[in-house]
Length: 65
Image 1 (cartoon, rainbow, N blue to C red):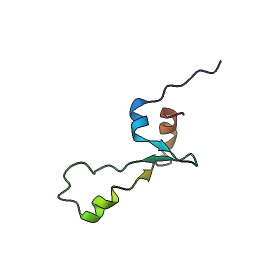
Image 2: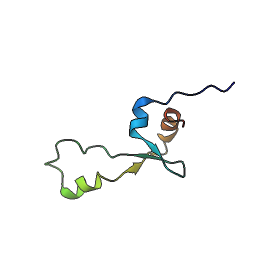
Image 3: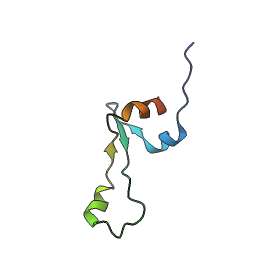
Image 4: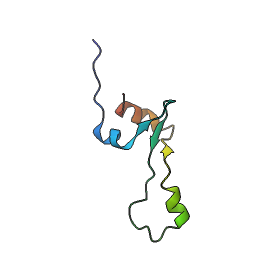
């Protein structure tokens, strides 16, 4: 019997799987103390990024489906 795995509630809110199986994430450092950051750097924080290869196995375990 194959057991169903539970999805990590915090991870499912933060990560999405792409069509090729990579994991997308949002950028950090975009919430406060924005006056000291340049407009260019704040604009770049709007873009999504990929989870690093080192962290990907941990995140995959948290979002199995």
